[in-house]
Length: 329
Image 1 (tube, helix red, strand yellow):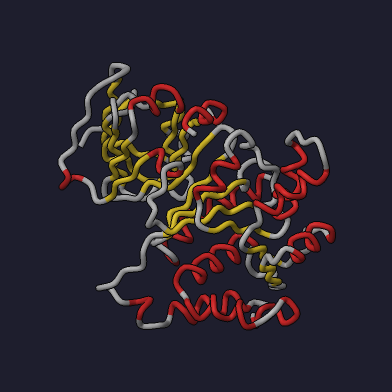
Image 2 (cartoon, rainbow, N blue to C red):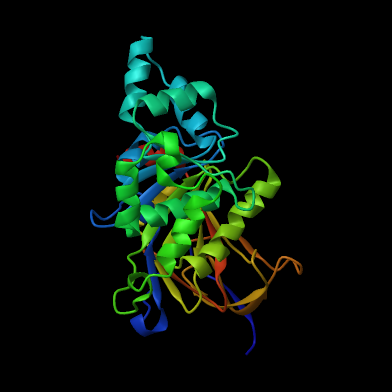
């Protein structure tokens, strides 16, 4: 079929029959978590660059995980706020303790380690260099939500013996053991989705940014129940699955809090079968990085939704006006 590019009016109604899509997501869902949802705020080793809404995000997510030096970033974040006394600073840090710190801990400062250790934070050392702190963190998050025996281990062991976890790659061993269990592989009782919002991982060193992008694809295979989002001071970034995806949003959220968007074939060349609700909709459109055919600098024109059908999963970035999001809290 012939490829098409259609320029739409700035605002158009969009109605999609349910049979045309297999996936649905709410664009502002990272701010409005359901009480029953499983969720984790993952702090990576980059400066927390969404200070306007960070404390609000903290309160929304079930657990908070610092990947190694991410604990330094959390500890130092409170220095950027205005306080009258050192005591107030210390108390605020105590009110915002992560559930876990994990990694080889080569980046974790001694003063930060001592503070969180003295306040009961679970610090898990994993020495292996054959996986990243990001992977160690996602394996940990999976164990936390799906393995009661893992949570029990943490209560009967101490930091002295690394909470009963092998120092080299114990988290990975426990994770793979969990994946072999019958409950984990029971199709009649699928594992509930876990939403992970990662802060950091984008910007900074380019190789680390690319590695962050690879996590969309590796998790899709290893842990398809994990919905991963990256939030920066400019973008919300996530993976659009294949087989049709309906993205919904409130009208006011579209008008005031988001800007441009892009469909980015970072994983591999693919074809955008159809989009409905973008300023420049496309049909039967091959897209790849090597050819330069990338739908960038696009934007939403659907009044309250848009539809994206890609032959393969594709990275989607949405410009977010973080400074305006404070109006939602």
